Image: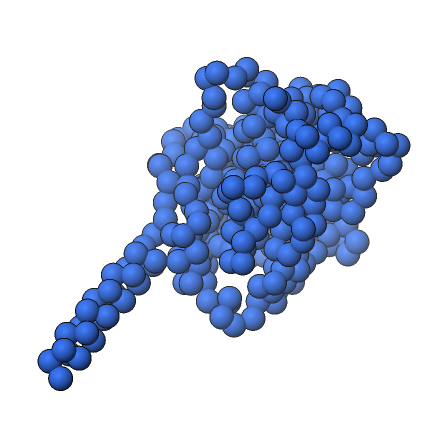
Length: 291
């Protein structure tokens, strides 16, 4: 009986330890939120960050950034929310600190955010980019109609469980440029890994929906991240791309094989990359095609 008592006690202690670890907050380094936001620059970041393609439902005509179409995943259907300046239907009541917590740590006023919102990438953004983006969103036309509710079945609808997911798979931090590489290369890497979150869609994910870090940009067969082709250098070269043609495709959607990109990537181009500067499109192409 004494052995069983000790065994139960050890299991209980281990269980408490595991629970404490899995439920602990996951936060990155503090940001300088005293910076002055630039609305014009933030409007550009709305396009860089893919906000329009995700949070605008052009088919329903519900309004700019007023909520997007549902993203179907093995864990449920996630509907991108209204992120206009409306205080009730949107995020107009959010403080800069709350916005930063969502972007950098995946924590919203309602609790843990699901990684369908790519905070794993947004955490890499610079402090100035976060402040500018917030300023621009607070300056948007408010839309008072809330987005549809997400359809997330039990047990995935328990937000507290996302603390465990974060402790296993999420490491918040800021982008660190490679001093051995050019400024253009580092700008491209920042965009791909950070705000543009190309890596989130073009990489496979494991059974728990986390990006497979050992196979970044090798393509996604489907599932949580949707189906997306490989963006490795070898795959792009095989498809006929060089830096100039890849940058051109990001502007107009035409491929070297005289095809036109449609579907989700078509929306990314029409709502996002076609609005970028030529320098940013070239930077992404430079990074992806670097040897």
